[in-house]
Length: 300
Ligand code: CP
Ligand code: NVA
Image (cartoon, rainbow, N blue to C red; front, top):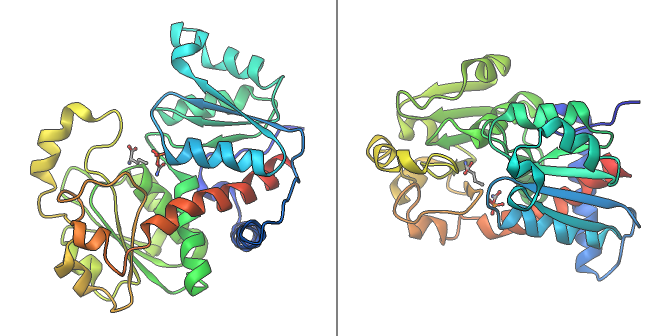
């Protein structure tokens, strides 16, 4: 039987996603109460990184350990992969020795190629196209504090990037309205948008996107791998900063979310990032709880 992978958020059904959010809440409560939950005792998760990370690495390594397993950090620079060993061969070999693999890489086709050759579940820890673990966590953050996402409105301000794509997948799955405000030339991929149907609108005006929104969220203007485009992107995205005025267009109790790392004074002002509507530190912690529920589902 081929293993179950999590390469994009809509690899889960809506019912599975809801169950995962509930389970993440239980695991969080148990951890807060000092209760252990060794449901993956003796299992090994490989953590293969081709890009830097703080939250993803720490949450997966801590998470697998808290579930009774072991996390094996694998940097592409220290592997034969970094010297040109094919990704499919790497998958064939590594997946014979571990019970699950999280990968952070560049092109999404690298992770699909890895998954096609893998004998164990593969988890997407970010590709250029999707960041499903982060949006899973953001949904959990909302779910825990406010409940269902159905009928809510999310405003995405900025680049139509990997995070935007995973929010688009979420909008269709959980039936909420997603308004993406991005400058021309930085739209999300049309096929990803089209698959979400009427749940997603692409706009140019950030204030229009933020109007009466329940969540306002953004991300860096230049993602990992786009360092050389930084100056051009700063020019293009100047009007797409989340500041107090933009938050003022949203509902009075709207949440501000950001996957982090953030650049104060670029995509978000410090007063919003550190202000009372911001849930960014809770989101960061929730990576741990949401991904523990995910590992349990896939590797249990
Ligand atoms: N949000 C996120 O994925 O952070 P890292 O790049 O630090 O893992
Ligand atoms: N869009 C960002 C997210 C970082 C967590 C990137 O890909 O670099």
